[in-house]
Length: 100
Image (cartoon, rainbow, N blue to C red):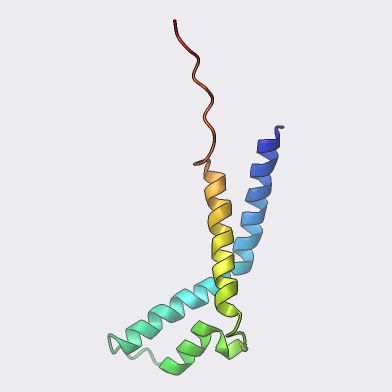
């Protein structure tokens, strides 16, 4: 196996672990953000107080409001970096042999 193959396997492993860890905070942030918008802007009654949705959305309910956005952001960046790396977008192409 080449060093590049080992690197890709490592990125795949890191991506899988990171996705498992960050899934719950990201899904909570996404769903509560959407629900807050539906309640505030579209006046939908979801049966959940808007204040509670915002507390969950910002991490305040878990007393993590100071670091919750940073953890979500860093986790998302990590997933993007490992995911893009695994796609091979930035892979160097083999030189094309010259024809006579």
